[in-house]
Image (tube, rainbow, N blue to C red):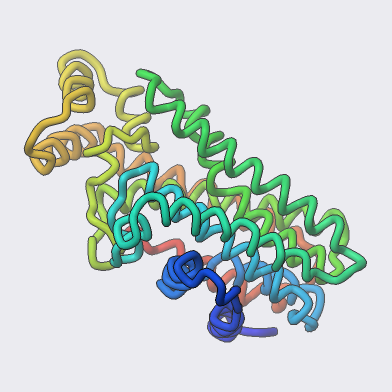
Length: 324
């Protein structure tokens, strides 16, 4: 079995080796930039690990894994625009460095680069792999649209929020694992079990990201904390707080999120204080761990020997503790 460190290095090399047309360097410079910022490479590594559960021919899954990572970074370029986030992984966001129009266009071309990479899957599974990718890409866009729609809604239920993050974030993690399983020759049952493992993990990781935006260390998180609160973004923390708060506390919270004060730091501090009074952080952490436990239950059912799952389990465990 290949280690996660080796698979990340392999993914990085494959991403670095991508070549683009020299005719319009301004188009591809932001693409190289966003891909060079690194990140955990969670999706391509999980794709390759999933393939490796069933086959040692991980080279057959490498370019599709790269395609998934390129698509993920494409969504980040556009998300930063929509969220008005000036930092990505501790560096200027693409639109901050090159401007809005260039960021939109360079982001667009990344979607086609991703499709080209996915198209390099083995011929015998190409149709299934491509269909999964296109379905997932559409679901991610639906999730983003629901997130945008939330901006105009005064009240969002916990169930609505969880469905949104399932589509916007979790399905791409799930598709990464299922893609690897398909290419590795897994049974239909194992493909679906790995998809469910990734879906549940993806939901947990997004809840953790919500926590990081409020409680994380800026140096480790890669961008300024409190941005979601300042932007009145409906994260799990805010959705849950609005659900459980009452009386004067609820009125204060609504007044804070409906305002745009000159002193954003004071607003962030005040909202965090309400979160703390309601123990929202603890509730969010507990929910994330519930999803993680369910994810591991799905992984346990995958019909390969336990020792072949050990590296995937260990990488997941290493990622779980990133909030605390």
